[in-house]
Amino acid sequence: MFNEDVLDFHHIKEQLKQHCSSTIAKELAMHIEPMTDAKAIQENLDETAEAMRSLQTEVEQPLGGTRDIRESCKKSRKDFVLTREALWDIYLTIGAYKRMTKFFRTKYMEYPLLSLWVQDMPNTDRIENRFKRVFDEKGGELLDTASPKLASLRNTIIKTREKIKNDIQAILHDKDNQKYFQEAIITQRNNRYVIPVKQEYRQYFDGLIHDRSATGQTLYIEPMRLVNLNNELQEALIGEEQEVLRIYRELSALVKQHSNDLMDACEKVSHIEFVYGKASLAISYKGVPAILSTDRTVNLMRARHPLIPPNVVVPTNIQLGTSYRILLITGSNTGGKTVSLKTLGLLSLMNQCGLFIPADHGSMLPIFHNIFADIGGDEQSIEASLSTFSAHMTQVISIIKHCGPNDLVLLDELGSGTDPEEGSALAVSILEFFRKKGGALMMVSTIIMSLKIMHTIRKVLKMVM
Image 1 (tube, rainbow, N blue to C red):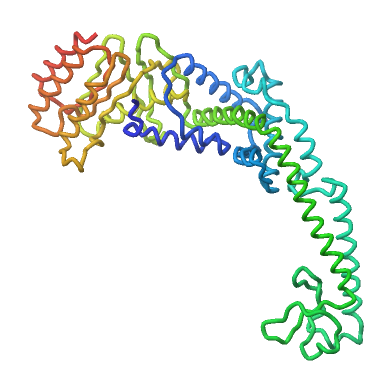
Image 2: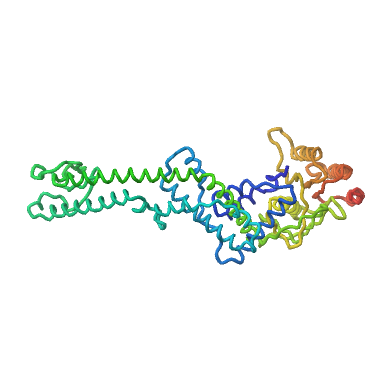
């Protein structure tokens, strides 16, 4: 349990999503979860460090050009004929995979961890070479060279259209015909070339009527001398359409054959894109990798809440887990107590997600199994008709029941919402309970208390370690 909502971690996910370059990487950003395995966390941090170094030093980055091809691969397995757009996306994506693979294989020494992801990338040369003969690399249009039959059909279409246009021009420029025409233009109706003829001259112009204007004054007539040419053109166009469909069916079958390799490559490349997103986010707030402490030491130096604008946020130092494991913050309202608690909780979450934290180099964080937070009275339950104080205490009781020695507990305004003296006494009792229970690191904020109460708390806490 990590109380991500209370700590506003969903906003960090949204920020990370914006820094990711591909659809799948953005999905990974929204599903990122804190880890508790030290080796996995460190590996994630080291990968992010490599990506950051790449972004800061390389002139050309290995990113860009990938599309989400997962659905197309799935459809191909069910023998769907993929659309031109889907096939074009696959072709572009294969090219992007190859560029990334070449980059990391060339720079293995500089980026060893990221290079591991492309070490066993499947060979997609066969499918790429076939696609290369089919698609125009600039616009994704189907090339005439996609098949000999397609080239022949398109050649027929071009020549037949030229013949039709020459014949129509001859008809339009014949002086004996000038009076028949509404306009001396070439147009089409029902995919056949026609001439706009005035209604009153219909009987003098030999041809087939395909349409008439809204006013009825103009008839769109296919001259009889063009009927055979129009038929030839339609036959060639239908043939072209059928051949294009055959080519798409062939390419879809090829995608099906390579779908496992494509999906495998997609997963690997998307991970790298996601890591670069983490690096880009770290650069945006000048983040650093936290040192993973093995003795539960918290030492945040000039830590900054990542959701507060840089020109507004006030850096804070937080030490915990060395001389004491319960840190009590007192002070007036709007003094920054809640922000400090959220900073510790949020940066701990980010660290365990393999994200850099906005703090100075040398900052240290342990790995928490759980982070429990009761902050800002956000857990007030209207449905249960609980008061703010009751809801607050319900949260505290839940935390007491579930927290363990490897957890972090964040309590905001402990003892607030009731009589100050009673609240202070309750705060002392709660802290005493946590002291006796032992283990968990705690950061607690509360209102200014009387010297007597503060003296009592000091006595309770001085034996906490």
